[in-house]
Length: 178
Picture 1 (tube, helix red, strand yellow):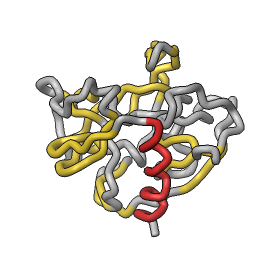
Picture 2 (cartoon, one colour):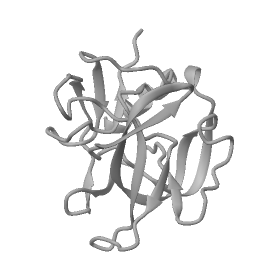
Picture 3 (cartoon, helix red, strand yellow):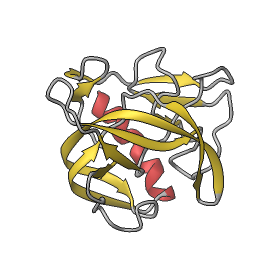
Picture 4 (cartoon, one colour):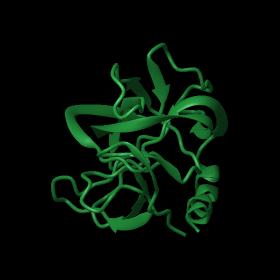
């Protein structure tokens, strides 16, 4: 069921993004919160508030936006790309033990932490020290930016995530319009 929910949303991104499959290390931020850094980030010529999410580093095949990654899956030394994957069990905060993801929808708000964050196909810096045996990475991406068209996501938008209820600016995406 969970994979079906994720895969059902994927065809919407196919029409909006230049997709590629990467194989190797990547960060999976699907269940992470994102906190504002106080900086801004530009995506497709648009400016967004920058958020930082701590995400587990996994290994395997994952889906990437080739345009944002300039057509290459290779990350600089000490870094990994934050990518999309259909794995349903992976380390999650706060203990970083392996648990099953729980997808959910929510509506963005203007309250602090009430937005959503898109970390898909942005660079992450690997943390030096593992936590509970898990390699983590600090991932930086835009808050309230749509992974489908790189546009602004306004308050009141239905969005999806695997982050727990109460997570600030959960990583995910806006539910595409029909």
